[in-house]
Image (tube, rainbow, N blue to C red; front, side):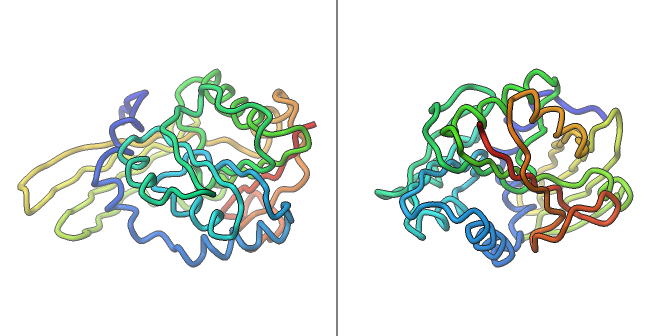
Length: 247
């Protein structure tokens, strides 16, 4: 399976991407964010950054609670949708997370639902993590929510076919060269159109993140294994949720 190094630029702007992932559980996401806020206990007027915010649903959820929230995403299509949600507490910008954003500004930085590890080179992944770190005020906190690579590798579904609104997705997955790769073959019945997209996410482990965080001077304070905040277990946990502080 061959994957374009810049696969995310086309795929995240595609309507098929949003259709394929349209059934993500908003209630579970809201419950997770509520639990995070109880754990972090940010000040009522805290400045928050949602990195890789997509169409802004989680940033809006945070802003509706009174926090000042900024969302950034590479996809201009997603940002154009998110901008319709803007208000005095909520703003959105198209931005590549590998490039510096506001420095020493945010109390909390979020990176939700495996929105990291897309890049082909370690330098780019390091640059992205540096952006997250630099955006925080000293003493600020980062929450990075990633898949647990060991669990995903053990439970990998190699072939799957699903249909959404007359669009058939023929999905093939593999673990190759320390990356989870997904080929998505699409048949749009209404338009009689075929298309193929790919995804590639680095199979980073806890040890990988510990090295990357240490390189950026980020102190890991907690690691959870799921959205209910159970302890992380390499074999049994579906998620790798890292909480870290900036000194």
